[in-house]
Length: 106
Image 1 (spheres, rainbow, N blue to C red):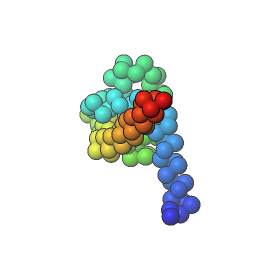
Image 2 (image 1 turned 30 degrees about the vertical axis):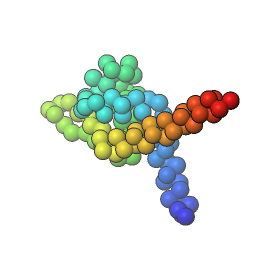
Image 3 (image 1 turned 90 degrees about the vertical axis):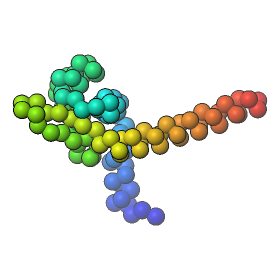
């Protein structure tokens, strides 16, 4: 059984993923590295909103950045993001299949 401290860490991590804007940014970055200007164009979010969300994702270890001259290029931690997306998609698929079976049995 995880300790209360570890459970709190889990909750903090999942809170990061519970914000639709952060998930949208992760999905964008999963397609490839982008700078903030490209993220603004892709999402329609303001620069300050994107910067705030990227900061939280970075602290959670889900994105990283590198300097390219004056630009900051953001990358998703692709392995972790891919693993998380695969797990969630699998779970959603299982739930939907179970619901379809229940509807078919009715």
